[in-house]
Length: 369
Image 1 (cartoon, helix red, strand yellow):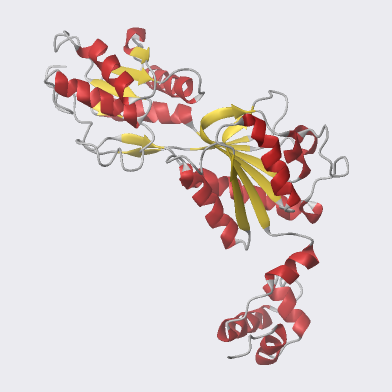
Image 2 (cartoon, rainbow, N blue to C red; image 1 turned 135 degrees about the vertical axis):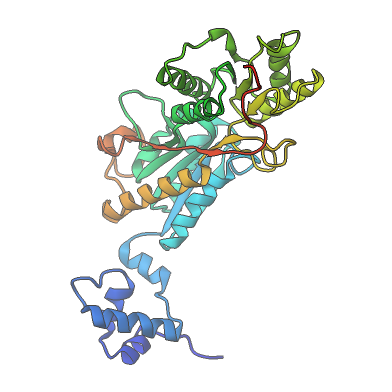
């Protein structure tokens, strides 16, 4: 079996000192090693298939190179796993690994899950949720650099940094899409107000009408729920018995499952989508929106992008925090306040835009409307 190359082998091949190899391959070459020597070192390392010993490097830097992720349901749910996938891809590209714990929506397990990860000496923590919602932040998250993804700190005067979808902009761009097709009588079937996503998407819908100088018909805004059956019954209420001249020509939905229910209602009533009624979803749900007949036009939630943005920000904080740990009460976590270690800049929300996906369920306004 061939012997594994060492830093000394790289140094000999590149014609430099062993310390120069260490500086360059550990990311500290600039200002310490000439650019030409850095290039020779990288080429020698590649030729010898050499990489630094991660365990030894972690010990020297007093870092574990591990990021802990707590989720409410992402791991066990078919939805939103792309948030973790995006975060993990960024972590791996920076030489970190992720460890994920899922509480299965049991908030009483939050603090224990964080403590378990802290016991593994993680360098940072991320909390990820299925669906945008406020979070009662576990206080022991204050002990290391931490960030929230798809959720936000529920305390108005404090906060960990949060990366969330720009739901208001998404609702506005959805309405603007059907307006560009000539629609003016546009209904909005929304989910309930238990999640912040619904009212934010409605706000964006209203913003689009305001920007276009058009009044909002509040009778066209109906909060029905989030599932196929509620979409079906909501659409039946809007469309059944209506003359073509008085029914909405487009129906925006707060998620793709509602949109499926609307399409089914249209078929029940003998209406064609999109020739008679355009229907638009939200989320771009995997194996649902694209597979639907007709394929759903929708606003895609930026799941992977949120995970990547959150991890990028977290690793930047880890890099600037001494030993990757926040100073607190000596490590016990008792009474620790996440706000105590969060700077004003760190407490900001980062809004990630949703993406318009145009498919077959939206089309021009019917003739005469």
